[in-house]
Length: 409
Image 1 (cartoon, rainbow, N blue to C red):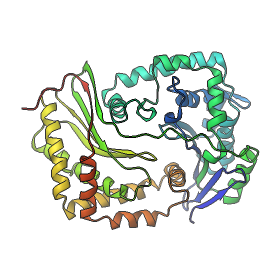
Image 2 (image 1 turned 90 degrees about the vertical axis):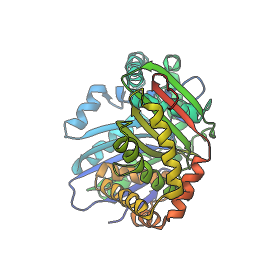
Image 3 (image 1 turned 45 degrees about the horizontal axis):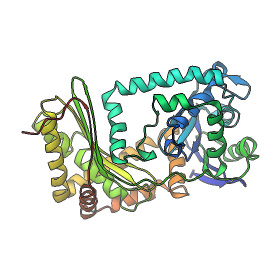
C-alpha cells in the first residue's frame, strides 16, 4: 500500500504507510524546529527540552515512561538537530496506541520540574564533555561554526556551560508553547498499521491544539572561515566544507552524487588516492548536508599529525580533479549506492517513519520513492561536475582538532 497524507483542522499533518510482511510499527512526532531557532543566550534549549520531557509527563515519572514502553519490548527515542526535533517509538503492532499516547504526553504534558532540571543540567554537561573529548564528533561543531560564523545555524546543538546554566523551567515551557505548534508537527506511522486507527489517535491526542505556527528561524548565510582546536590527540582531525545547497534545491541530487563519487565509499577517489595509494589517512570521506536555505559539501579526514597537511592538500586536489573529470562509471556507481541506500533504509519501519516526515517537511507532500529514484537517474555527468565545481568555487570553511596543521611539503 502507498503512504497517505492527512491534515487535521488545526494544521497538524498525519502520514500513514502500511507495510506488508511486518509485525512491528513505528510512530513518531517530528517537529520542524531545532537549535537554530533558540533565543540568544539560551543555546542548548531545544536539546534540554528533549531531555526534560522524559523526566516526567502526563501521569508517569521518568522510570514509568521507560518501563511502559520497554515492558512491551519496544524502544522510545528522541533527537534534536539544528532544524528538527523528533520523538519516535518502535513497537509491536498491537502497541501502536501506547507509543502514540506516550509521545503525546511528552510534548503536551511534560512536568518540567525545576529540581529535575538542575540534575539534568549535569547530565547534559557530561554529554558536552564527552563530545569535546571525541575529536571526530566535536570537529563538526567547529566546522559548522566556521561555515556560519556568528549565526544561530553555526552554534552547537548542545550549547555551552554558560547557556546551559541560563536555562530555567520557564524557558522550557515557553519553548514548547511557541515552537511545538500544529503547523510544525508531523505525526507519522509506518509498518503494520491501520490508517483509520492512526487518524482517530491523531484527532484524540492533538485535535484540541489551537492552530498556529512557530516563528520562522533566522535566515543563515555562508561566511566561511577557520576554527582550530589545538588540543593534542593521537591523530589530527581535519574537516573542510564548501557552500552546499538547500533541501529543495533542484541540483541537490547532482551535488550529493558528486560527493559520493568523490568520497562516498572505499571505491571513491578520496579513499583510493589519499588512503590506499598514499597511506596518508586512516579515515576520509565526503558528505553533504542540507538545511532549508543553505547547506554544506564537506570532507572529513583523520591522519597522523605529520601526514595531515599532505592529506588535506591531496584531498583538495582530488575534488578539483573530480569536478573536471568525473566519469560516467563513477557517477553510475554513486547513483547505485544512493538508490540502494534509500531502498534498503526504507525496509525499516523506523526509517520509513523518518522518511515520511522529512519529505513532508521539505516538500509539503509525500514524495513517491519512484520519483526520487527517477531524479537520481536523471542526473548527468555534466550536471554532477557542474554542481561540484560550483560548490568548490564558493569558498571554504576549515576546522581542525588535535594539534597544529603544518604546511604541506
